[in-house]
Length: 517
Ligand code: KIV
Ligand code: ZN
Image (tube, rainbow, N blue to C red; front, side, top):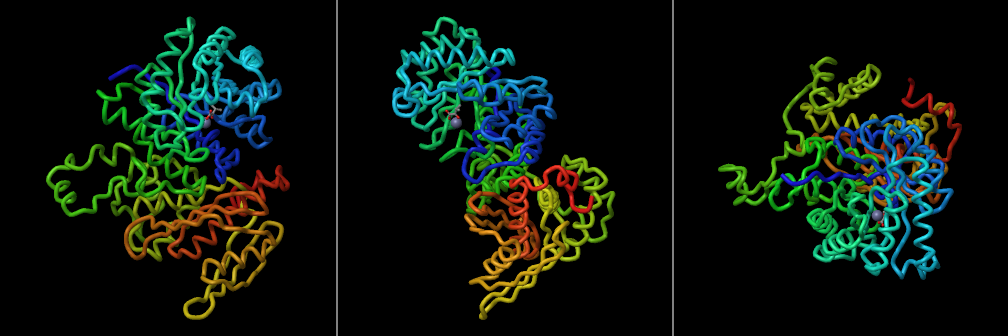
């Protein structure tokens, strides 16, 4: 086993920055709890100067999550650094992460400053950040397209000013593994005070090389890698946390590093994130994709039956993929449900258990066998990262060889029950139109994916949607044995988030986090 490498998770910052991935402070907190269970070393919780919501997201995570370092991003601007420092004030261990572009291209065309001005800003920013915390990270944005002599000057000056971590990002996913490794070797070798900082890799996946580049940087001495769960992030995304970690675990000789990540929490983390963003990883995604452990070809199945190692380099259990075992049925009681959730790693409070038990019995009436995956889908569905301003109380659809028509009823704490009817070129389209008519908002569906939670005809269908509501992109999720109902639930969830984002009567709504509580 090689040297220790810190896992810096930026799902809540770089991951959130991608269109459609915006997260409420509540969603960030829930994800941060799971990142803590995953045992990452650093959680970058947001960019506090970007918005009030971002500030609150970082503040909430800093207040609640005590073990990992909590980082906040800031440009090299006084106001940004002030916001980051303030948001991190309650943190047990806070890190201010300042960045400025260093490539000629960015300096000339984006920032319109000279290299000397860039150097001055970088140093001033690091010094200001040090007034808030001793843990300051400096990133040279677009490092891989920066003149190497200038990059060395900036890095040396940033360390001199007090930076304790130096990040050399491949911002546009341009580098090849050998080049990226060479950059780390050259900078670490040439900069006289390089031993006073931890070097960090941060790779984007535009050429599909983010994980390979991150592993190359580790080999060249990086002591930290920045990555996101499911590889979410700007454009083609960031380096995927689960792939870096499992590469180290499966190939300890070739990728010789150690990290603290509890790999058994990986799948749970990936699923939770999918529910928050409204996007599942692609089916063939390494480690967490639906087909990552599926063996279809007869020759592979034969080999697997003889010896699992023939076609499987890691066991699904190692990354926490639940077995599809029959666990509960119609006659199972509340205690059995509570125990099974506990075995799956979830301790439920009384209120949540009560609600889940009710939903479980309704599901058991429709579906004979309740599997672990069904229980997890019910649990994710209960999590509301926005108050339930609208709740689906009725849905009736006719479709077939006639035009599809949907009648929908929504209830809300102030508005009472309202009904809408609409037609569409399919049952889901009609349902979406009926909901749109009730809430009187412009709804554009950007993405709607349906996935069966378990095999079999009576499976629970899980729907994730990304919608644009009056110009804002939001996601939602819903589950039901009926995919039209699951779609309606997913849309209602997204609309609740839209309303929450509008900041409507925020104070009183917080107290109504769960319906009827
Ligand atoms: O990709 C990048 O350069 C970044 C920096 C802000 C670290 O995300
Ligand atoms: Zn980035």
